Image (cartoon, rainbow, N blue to C red):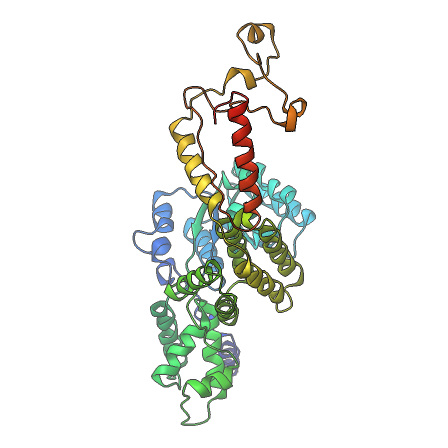
Length: 437
């Protein structure tokens, strides 16, 4: 009877997914994050110091965030609680906090792991602050989104952000080797197909093990798959480039330069290459917004409006419907008149601001809310532009010690042609009316 139960238990264990069977049991077994869990890693040092603070684990899926949180609790003898921001609300948080307080009164602290913490709203995020401050919990939040944009500043100020990196090919290969050792079987793939499998996982350790299981299930006795057969079996293409490596930067650079060079066909080609490779469309939307500001500017003020609208449209529609909006913006930007005058003016003004940051504006343009300030000459001689001919007084607004500067120099292109005429007209009036031209 005992042999029967042992056999049944082994069979049940065999049905467990590889990712679960190969889950590390110690921090030393964690792969792909040597900067965190290696001998000199940040988490390793933290444990050795005997002091564990709240943390935010930021990184893509399948990089070990949940596993490391569990191991942390075990290595520091903290009670481990886990919730997901997707399925939890205020009532759930209150129950977790009450349990942690009771546990704390018994002398044991709680490590609370919050998956997808960025899904909590601002008020929910704030509810963590008191229990973090009084030591009721050590918070470990996991997020795939940039914490700077998705988490409250108050929460971030109380937690250390640790970045989990996508697995590289070497790390993914080590997972495949462990999987082969665990199953006692060699993965039936040719060398090129094995490399393609690693690329398909796209830095996700869980994904590479899931793909390996699919291959083992599909392979007949003695069958070995080449790359084409692998794609047919798993129904997933290898990415055209690794989003964390040179291919990503090469293609976004090519897209930017094609837009700047007013070549809509090339720009659209590179945009589609990145869509096809699985690039985050919102990343591309943000880059298009940047191109509108940097390379078009006021030559066509609608460029920024359209780029922003396309980004929002994708955010609203999702994929694949929203990708057309980004393609529309890409073509619009490539065909718009180009100008980097605002970009250059901004950089020049920023340099001047750093050099003359302590210079006071001229007194005549400063308000005089007190008698003392009025006696000191504040607001004296100020001319209200709307009361002047052409609604232009020609006064000098720069600090007196600095003198007048010119940062913005629009070209004779697009809408900036009109701005050029307007600025030239004001320069003439400034000279005629005694201002400093």
